[in-house]
Image 1 (tube, helix red, strand yellow):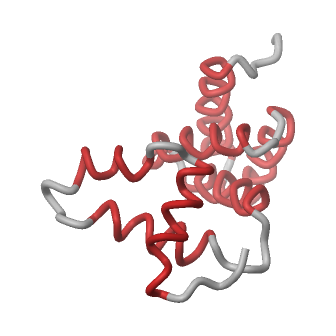
Image 2 (cartoon, one colour; image 1 turned 90 degrees about the vertical axis):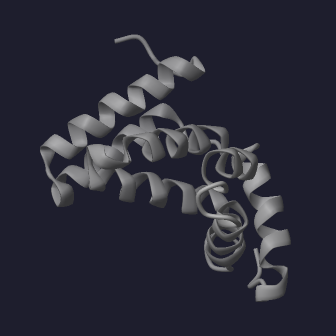
Length: 134
């Protein structure tokens, strides 16, 4: 990725978000643009075109960092966490690698947040057919 000029951030964000989370902008638009006109474009432009498109980390690494951060935040971000676990799987992270990152967060965010994140991740693994036996 390269640094994206602000005038190209929406275009870059659309391409990147569509590659990582197909249909994201449309889902955001359907859900929020009636309340906050332009919200979906702002989100895609600032998050994907502004941050995710930066140089320095590949998308796979950015995604596992996002999963780890959301795991630390607890149940209040469960829907977003599950979306990002799915994206991490799609980018090539394994169930085990994701679980290990979540466990690592127990040292910094606490055991209850780790258990809640593992439970949510397991739901995604089952939904995507990635779950191992056990």
